View (cartoon, rainbow, N blue to C red):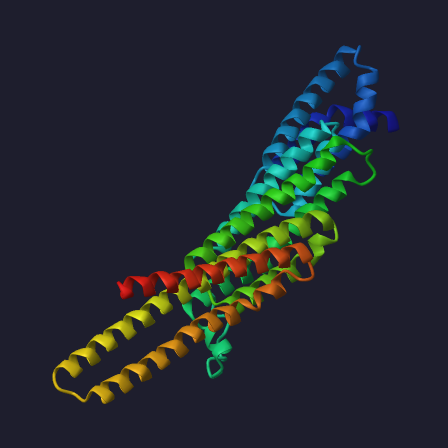
Length: 358
């Protein structure tokens, strides 16, 4: 009677696998297959068992194809992706192919998440705080700040955790298995995903030009969100983050000094216009001493405004150093760029002054 039950299970295996395929019960299908496949192969010379084995192998190939297609879906959760990958590995599928399909699916998921993070709709993250009167708090409510805050909040809430999950899922697939060349795919995968994220952030920063203090705050929040990922790939994360933050800092510094140069030229134009007005007033009969005093007073105001323009640009850029942390070479590079920007600002002043002199 026991033998009859075993034979019944064997002959019903193709139908059992088909039901599992229809219901998406892939793990159960592999369990049933593993229990019976060895016996069927052992006695495949028997025509009846050979036919059952052929039907079973056909169903398992279909299950394997369904799992591979499932892995590439951008809507599959990381747990489901890991389970599907483990099932394929248990089926004896090529581990390199399975790992690549897993990473391909996670790439699709993360790209979809990245698009959502940079959607144009802003988030209301600062409601109830508009009564704050300080300049720093007012900066938070500008459209540029809201755009960057919204993107970073979404990245910290969805994209970065999903990337961490994908990395930990990959590590689960490697547990208990001999080291293979596929291990090198993980740093490559993480590097590509972070570069995509940083490129989108850089584009947003270049386009919106948010206040520097807001930029620094957002970058610190991104760095905090990646602590979990840093524990898995510390050297890679440090290298990528320093490169990205240095690029963001350079962009913000260029914007600050471009604004300063624009303000400087405007102030010189204003001074030139005021001097012409006073000169015309003098020609119309106004006291010479009175006109000279007004000119000197206007020059003094303009000198003060020009000095404040340069000082303000320097003050705005000061928080950028905190983004770079204690990395000496990055800080040194930033200081070099600061020096270059100051030189360019004073050259703008000299050029504008020479033009007015004639």
